[in-house]
Length: 563
Image (cartoon, rainbow, N blue to C red):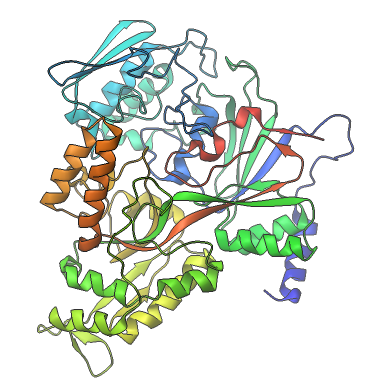
């Protein structure tokens, strides 16, 4: 960006930005302002699916799948997270399981009502209701019964071993609903319209049990959380956490230059790596002062998700050709100085389950042309291939509008794909439309949707690729591409019910070998999460990127300023 354009942006910011508290005032600051490039579609825990949505849940409610900086589960609403070691998770000789949830008795909803087993039982009934608009609910196949023992104890029995038995409440959902608030809404609207109730959208109707209260949400602008003075583990140090939403990453960077932002967490939602590198350069040049930039390895990838309703993409040779036609190494060098590696697996090379001898697709345009010829695609007079029926080999790609990094990758791939006879049509949309219409509902999907692909031991690959997670169009799917493969299903079913960590690793590696051959998804690079924060912020320890939201909000109640 030119100095002239930066000057114009800075001039506007100086006139428009909110004045931060004076640092010279007595005592440390009590608020923090984050920049976020993506806005959540909802905070209803049974509705949210994307990482952008779930990352805020640990701040305001009893989200179960939160981990600390040692990656231990840290559910603060139970006496102890159920484990085999503490006896709350038992495996019976016949292969069944029993998991006991013992709730803390001092947890309160934000309106003062106690959080009890009745809230969890009600959430379970909503979750399992066949008329609820949730699509795939894998836990229903494994949970045999849910029994309320008393007001603070629930026992869940499973038909077979299930690896998420203690990471999700009752092995099923991430956070409970306040029965006394949500049940009347559902009675009025009907369970079929559960996703449309005010809970999760209207701050006046959205309460949780967490350290912060959702005080306001001005859509398209900002979300404000305020300290919960009655949090059972003690009041947060900060009084207020504000999340400001930006549709353009340049504007976010300009806000850091102007000093009107305190921090940005790793992508997705936070600052993309390319812009974190830009801020790092500006700090080095002395144009930004008083900030720190840090990078974190991340178990996630940048991906093009195919739409397998397109019959052309069902041919594995076409999918392989797309990878051979793409200079992904050139992309990561040009955009990220090699900081983010080319993705050969959904796991980064540092992950213990990464398959070291996985099949790799280097940049080989001639190999791409050969595969396309074998698949029956002949070069047309305009440079675009056609099949025997005269259909052009054209793919529509949709990414998040305003994400400069993704737009640059599209432009590079558009040229490289055309070089082998494949036409890319770019049709980017705002992230809210993608989340509300395309991502899980599969309504009017493009041929490729450019979004992140987060996978680690806490959001396992079976959720993305098991055919049982495909729901009809208009219902929520975890398997958003609609990909089906019997061998995938066999391996994933076995993995899903295997508790032994070493055997799970072996199965993961076996699956990766098949996955790399099939190419069910087009990966570009493994993420490295970049974060920016103002000097003097203590306790902010983002650990990178993951579907698991605790990677940056896991200890929000402990954040504080040194001055």
